Image (cartoon, rainbow, N blue to C red; front, side, top):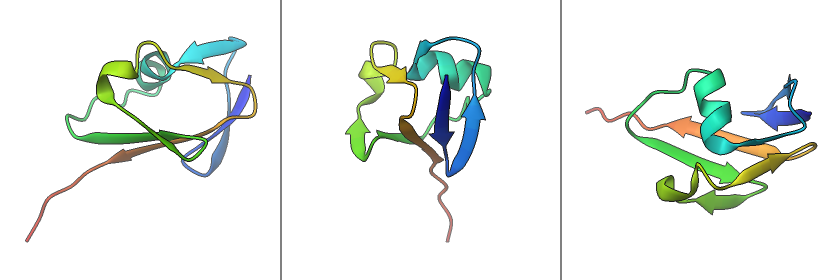
Length: 67
């Protein structure tokens, strides 16, 4: 499957994966993350159940705090 992840084309061997699986493969382990798929916000509790399909646009942002 080929998706757009954070504005870059990424290819995965599986035809379908969950957001949680993609985060694991890409080693996104930050505690404060915002996820949008095809422009729609996804709640943290839905990462394991939300399927990502070929052609989807996935945005995973790590929130930083500073002053």
